[in-house]
Length: 331
Image 1 (cartoon, rainbow, N blue to C red):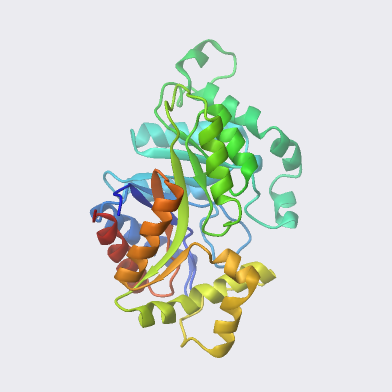
Image 2: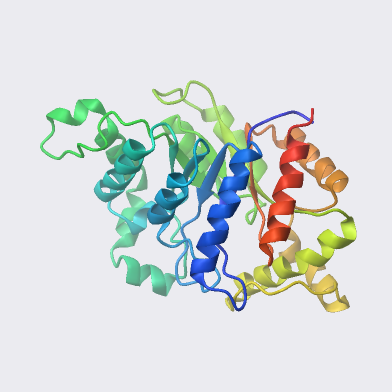
């Protein structure tokens, strides 16, 4: 298997009968282990109004994780820019970049990270910002530029600070934008499998070198549930299946404990909509997961693999990430 960097996308998932405080504690424990296991970066996703996802105040969590680790890169996967002012984002990430030099990433997306009613509550004029997404990225770049020192509108804490930008996406639109701006491109294939290969192709074909990036750099996110046996991984995956069902039906609940794989769950797993969602979910023993990851890397030719693993027990998550780290180090 081709050796490439490997990273983590974290949602700070809240399990049944647990609390957000426990989820935050678990996220930190995971980040500290990930650092030892050679993961390149630890990104936190922005979601809102989901009882099972506690990574809503993403910037706060990035500071919490970065402050208790030493070298792993920490960032946003991503900041949903239409929810925020570009000026404030520059202030926040300029501050983080100053506190933790050369360790902070700013991933930017334009989806709301929630339902439309909640999106309206977050920022009533967000649709105007959606249409201005490319321009608002340019504004953030300007705030970080040393040349902005002569401007009347400045973010002094950000000027000259090294915080690389990444464009996040789940469709071909984001590929065109990332390519035009010459920025690294991270695709959400862990839930949006349909356009992955087309989006990567567009990005590579249309990429324009920039001050940040000379050649294309791609990241693809996949779900991984690795265990000591295929059977154990399948049993653990029942928690994730129920989580996905909640997302697809709009009935989001706390992450449930695993159960045996019932006929009902197997039938659910085979449903076409679920199959599309789970296309890049690699579940099994070390050998099984290694084969699936190897095939994925060979097919996509991505520069980096981002991994998300949502399991009920912290111990099972840690074991899965440890197995994955070990196999990613093998040629």
